[in-house]
Length: 93
Image (cartoon, rainbow, N blue to C red; front, side):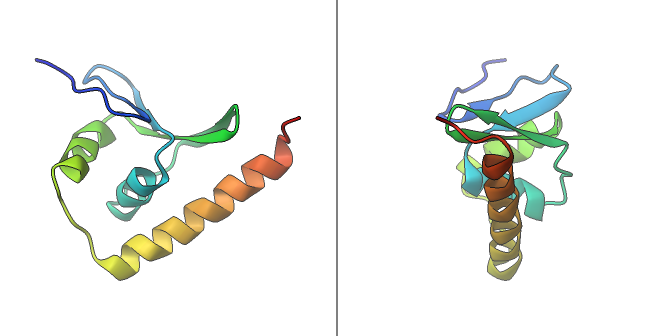
């Protein structure tokens, strides 16, 4: 099975976690009820970490899957707040 690589995505079926720096994708996964396991700073980016099974929904996102706009915007605002808090906790030079 071939895994497509996309900017901000690291996914293989055997991983315990799915990681992305793509905030649009993270908001989509959050809307799809995947719990946000953790976040961490990678340079100036925030890495969003989800359970490994989120990788399948990530591929569906890039194939055009949709979620209700209101839910997506709410998730995007929540993740933006998390990202801003992560940046203030770990400032970069």
